[in-house]
Image (cartoon, rainbow, N blue to C red; front, top):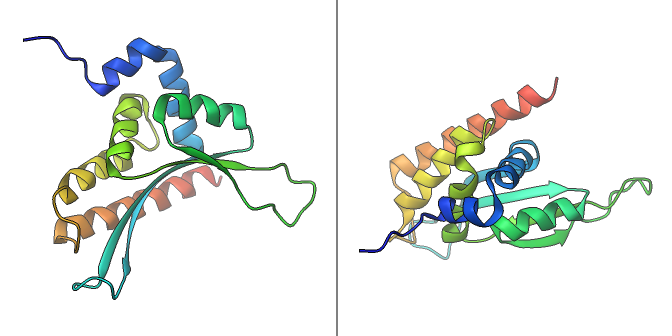
Length: 158
């Protein structure tokens, strides 16, 4: 039996703990980890669960560094109404397996977003295997994540 390294261990070997810690700090400060449920007539139960992991920053080099380790795609944000505002970009990590991989890489280094990341991982594991509808626990996780994200915003708006 060979020794397989976990995703996080592989990332530590490839990129170093310092870089992963730096990226986790960016996620803590500039990242969005969230989930929401919206109504859709396309599905018999009328609900769709959407997960999101996004990092926004004005410095595209910072996002390139994050993308190298976490994956995802970088996109420009729409220009602000104030012409003096610098162009802003975001790194979007799509689909549940990629979000799970990215979160596992930075999880042990997160501070502010640690709890919401743990909830996201629980949610992703919970929805694996079913595509429509949400269990009561999944809806509870979405509510908990929303409360933690709101609390995080309140702490940073000092």
